[in-house]
Amino acid sequence: MSKPAKNPLSILKQVYGYDRFRGKQEEIINHMIDGGSSFVLMPTGSGKSLCYQIPALCRDGVGIIVSPLIALMQDQITALEQLGIAAGAINSGMPPGEVFRVKQKLEKNQLDLLYVAPERLVMPEFLDLLDGVNIALFAIDEAHCVSQWGHDFRPDYKALSLLAERFKQIPRIALTATADRATRKDIVERLELEKGRTFIDGFDRPNIHYSIVERNNPKKQVHDFITHNHPKDSGIIYCISRKKVEDMADWLQEKGFNALPYHAGLHAEVRNQNQNRFLREESIIIVATIAFGMGIDKPDVRYVTHMNIPKSIESYYQETGRAGRDGLPSNAYMIYGMDDAAMQRNWIENSEAPELQKRIEHQKLNALLGLCEAAICRRQILLEYFDDTADPCGNCDTCETKPETFNGTIPAQMALSAVFRTGQRFGMVYVVDVLIGKVDDRIIRFGHDQQSTFGIGKELTKLEWQNIFRQLVSRNLLMVDVNEHNGIKITEKGFSFLKEKDSIHFRKLSKRQKTGKPRVPRKSKIELGNNLDQSLYEDLRDARQQMAKKRRVPAYVIFHDKTLVELAKIRPQSFEEMLEINGIGEAKLKKFGQTLLDVILTA
Ligand code: ADP
Ligand code: ZN
Image (tube, rainbow, N blue to C red; front, top):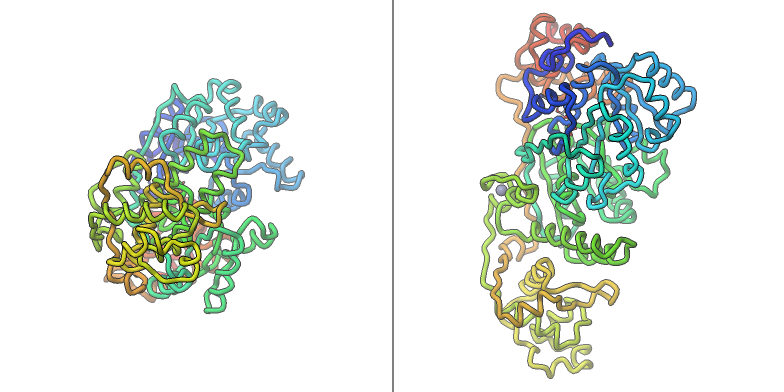
């Protein structure tokens, strides 16, 4: 594209149609334009892409964006083309002829942005090609993939350290939405960004409501959650295994929902088809393993549900961050149980990773379990994990109904000693039965009815004991050994708790939990406001749908809901007035302005 304005703010306005920068965007963009390098940690949906796109447009030459997301590159490029930006991609999924054409454009300096997969970028032949090209900057997206401490290490990313050596003069920007302190340090070292600046910003996602409850009837809990809050919305449901994904998707289909499965075991064609339907159609639920979601920038995902716990707070934050990128109210709803934790621990133990890394992964899991069992604001815990701070938010389950706690020192001692006396090899159900003094064949056969711990816990119910055991596991005083038929063992920390006679507080079961009723989080209503003309809004949506169909792109690539809401409220009467609307820049005005204006003027 011809580069009319080289001023970042005019580009923001003319190309993207936005009025002002958000958070640290402007600071980062200016730093890049001046030739500095940077590491950027900002949450999903906060606007990281502009931090490299605008400097690439302002500086001479092409911006090279390294991204692992081959399947989404084409969509990204189509979206950029709607803005009038000349973008191309090169990856292994493309036919050779197409690659050749993009390379030609690159050599002729006709591209503003080029997306490449990491394995392609570091090929000697490609690096040679780049030597002859004018490069504005390198952007390394999903930069946590470079670190072994991160949760999504990709060997291909390791080689990217050569950029610093080979292209010394060219600014580099590494971006991620997810990295704890160790991962950050690792990224900066590996990509040699020590001389650059680090920008960490805006971790809070205030429009997302967090809610985490114990799992008792998984399908029903999730079904109730969806029918109550999001009967017609797009959402993502994460499950721990392929089998669970299939099972849940089938079940939801039987219930009449548009639910599609997504996991690495599906044929690539089916996977892409399901992903595309999710991106292009309305009210689709995607039921997926963690294989789904990286780079998905659908702005109107209204909820993310976890049916099993993820492996760390970083994963949780990244996955839930896929909800509500448009800033409208959204839900993150998780149901969890201790068998998830056991399964995750088992995976860690059986992996090939070095001991140190296993220890780190166990700690990450502990932090996540701490979040699940927390009695304080979820958002505070999340933000503190990323070294940010916040007051209690009022928009999470623990803020809305503060869980009561109780001094559980004596029950904890009882539980640990019952585990010890039964030989640290029985499951939770059995040990609880011993504690409440249940007369049962197995217990009699093993002679556990003769022991001092038999029946010492009569005062509490089975449910209350389970609550205590879960919290003992989540605080790492007990562990579930998956290799030994889920037998419960006392950890080092558990033994020291007994020896030191420490005290401990637990979360009380709420009334709802006692009766087994699922807690249903607050409805997330989209406030469309009073002066919105609903029928005009629907007409605009229809028009958008037709324009999207014609171009074979998702509706949100044409305009976000937010832009349509503004149009229906303000009813601009001319092109000039339309440019004042958020999300309408010059290219989009030219392409779609007349159609929208016709809709407004004839309504
Ligand atoms: P990230 O890459 O951080 O997940 P994106 O770059 O995809 O986020 O941005 C999320 C959404 O916010 C996009 O639709 C983008 O166009 C929009 N956006 C980014 N910056 C601004 C801004 N300054 N004003 C308004 N909207 C913005
Ligand atoms: Zn809160």
